[in-house]
Amino acid sequence: MATNSVKRDYNMTDAELCMFTSNLCNTMTRDLSDLSVFGITAAKIAALKALGDEFEIYPSDEVLSAYVVGATEAKNVLANAVKESIRNMVTRCEIKWGPNSWQEKSLGVKGLNAFSDESLLSASRRVHTQMVAFLSQLADTGLTQAMLDDMEALNNSFEVAKNEQFTKIAERDSATEIRIKKGNEIYKYITKYCEIGKRVYAKTNPAKYDDYVIYAQGSISPLSPPQNFAYSLENTDFTWDAVANATSYQIEKSLDQVNWEEIYVGSETVFDFTPSDPGFSYFRCRARNAGGFGDYSNIVTIEYYPVLPKPQNVNAVASGPTGTDIIITFDLVPTATAYWLYESAVPLGAQEGGFSFKGSYSGSPITRSVTAGKRYYYKLKAVNQIQQSEATTPIYIDIP
Image (cartoon, rainbow, N blue to C red; front, side):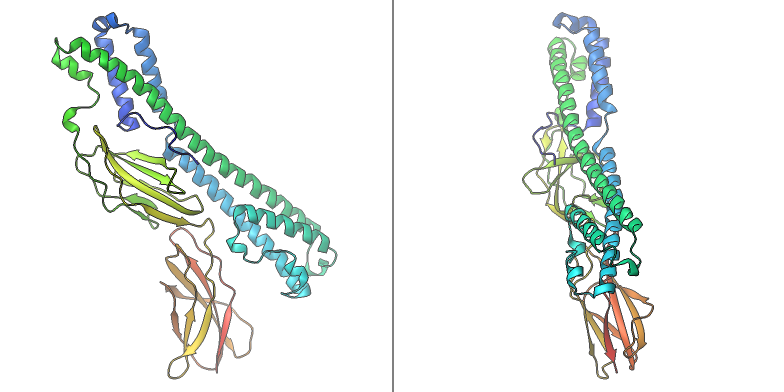
């Protein structure tokens, strides 16, 4: 995770720095005969232009973050495949020995959905080792050596994808620091050359003097903190109100509210952003003009799960005057914006049948009006705008 160990020395956007550098090189070329007395040469101007051109095409945080998102999505696909592979093996143990057998418990995958990537990989390799030992005993459940080979290959692919995600995050953080250093190097040169230009023309040519002023004094005004700074999971973007006298904005991100990294600099009041770090992340915004930064906005907290957990403690009870209202309760899932309910209605005492979708609900409890004389099975999924959880284990209630 990058920190603010390297600070920007300039109070303008990277794009503004590039444009100013290009204009300054043209200005110095025009005035070279006057500036040469202070050691400015065509070679030095060309060197500064080359630095500016290189800086302009250097990958932005937005570009590098897209690679992080891509690596994260690829890793998440494999994580889901690993979980499905583990559940497949657990099912075979339950078929052979029962759901509470020591063989099933020896796999050690209770609470699988809450596992971190590291714990998931470790658990999957442990399950693979156990299933190799159980292979001959589970042959009658359809387990084959080829399945175990596929599971081992899947585990290896998942590890590679985890490492690729880590690499992309590290590359983004390293590139951010390099970009700041490159910008600071350019700014060091333009402040030096602009100071020379101002000294040369201070008493002789006011128009040319102004060409060497980096920050126009008229643009320096006090800045208020951005108002209504917020994140929309539905649109996957930050938005905030424009600040009077601001020329650009900066958004910073932190995982601990101590170390902060810049993730956006620009003049727009909207920034597309897709979460990638599991757990809590914190964000703040501030405005900037030629006089520097204003105060920070409120801190926005985003809680993100690579895999959205499913609802826990699902329960159903009969209610109502005739006992044909079913009240379904469950624990809410952080970041979930809705819950999808599925129902299977079968004769009393029967096993579950096909499930049908019964609607999207905002939270707990959910009430269903049903017909007497049946058994009703229910399962739930938690969803938000970019994710959905696995379905809960079905529960049932008899309505005599």
